[in-house]
Length: 207
Image (cartoon, rainbow, N blue to C red; front, side, top):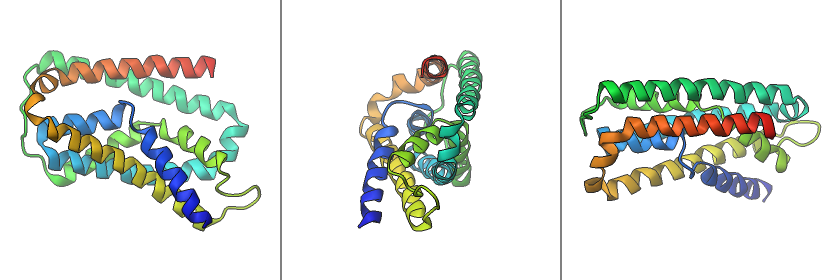
């Protein structure tokens, strides 16, 4: 009963946490446009695999991170640098390569590793799952219950994958209307990274 309750809470928390446009879900959408549904799906799978480990780290370090705001700030500052570099990267790529070739073939393993790499660059899930895990007291006050921890990380990964899969389905349904997104996708990603930079700066200094 406890595991079921924990699974449902974590699953929906992870599902809702990925809905707002961000690095991972927009990468999935961009991959669907550029390389087709199959590769977008594999990017989602790769990202969800990494979430398993991010959720595990979050649970194991939840108490430590909450007791040491300095560690949280380090995570946010790391994210700030990553998002700033990505914003520059996508902008330069857009300027150099304005014409995007759509639905080119990409190896499956490359798409999975792409999803894993992008998810590793996105450090936001760790403090997010720290907050979720602490709120529902996954490990208890003194010792960790590995049954609950495994339930937690599986729910976090599956919740993330569910939302990413919806992104895949959404972009496939409007496939005939994605030419504009494909043409300006790198500019869009650059703008998104810049917005994330602003959000991260606000979180560092005001939260």
